[in-house]
Length: 82
Image 1 (cartoon, rainbow, N blue to C red):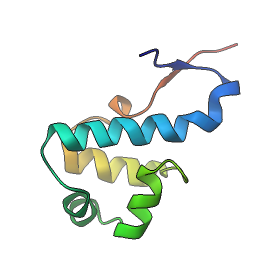
Image 2: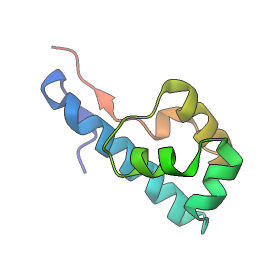
Image 3: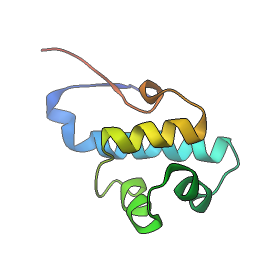
Image 4: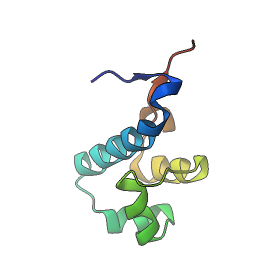
């Protein structure tokens, strides 16, 4: 998977972040309910974020990263400067 994005790809970044979080969640054999409890993000809001319909805030990404034991940078695609 190409993780480098450009400004033109900005609408897809939310979906890529959601996919990476879902992958980390699945790899840890945890549920969305568990992530909701551990991150402090309400379940309906977390489901919207994980569907890619709305993006995670930086604070939410930090909470998710702490819960999953990963760095925020592992969940965010690299961007290329133009």
